[in-house]
Structures are given as C-alpha cells and as structure tokens.
Length: 97
Image (cartoon, rainbow, N blue to C red; front, side):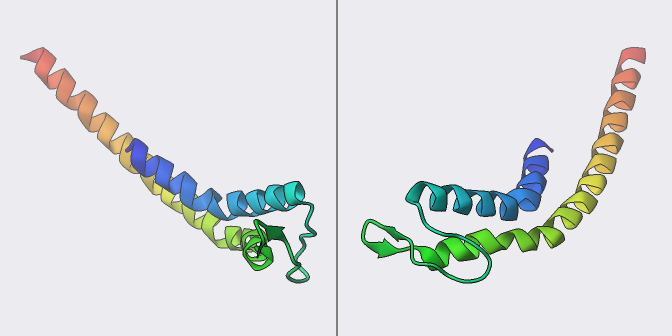
C-alpha cells in the first residue's frame, strides 16, 4: 500500500518536478528558459536547450496528472480503510477465541 501511495504521488508530481528541475538547471547554467521557444543552452559542449524546454513546458501536463492522481488517491484511501477495518475485525475474532 505504501508503494502504491508513493507511485500515485510521483505520478501527480512528475510534471512539476521536471519543470522545476529544468528551471534550476537553466538557472545554474545561465541559460534563458521560457515557454516562447527553445534557447541554446550548452553543457559539456552539447546543446540541451530543447530538452530543458520540453521539461519546462511539461508543467502543463500537471493539469491532467494531478486530478487523475487525486481520484486514484481517493480510491486508494477507500481501499486502505476497508483493509484496515478487515484487519481489525480479524484481530478481534482471534482475541475472542
């Protein structure tokens, strides 16, 4: 259940994490980064401008992933509650024996 919870949160947060990572990398490298277009950003002699641009604009996917993750999180919480109640019920039956 913990792994499922972590995966749900990771799914919902991935676009935002990617956008923040792109902003940090571009800031460290001193490269311009915005949604208007791809800018040259050199690292070790290679241009990573397109990769950073795609990472930076991925935050728009959060409009899909966060609501989906929220709905799945509600289902996860219901399943976790049912499993907890069943576990407590079994424990009570064992104690009564």
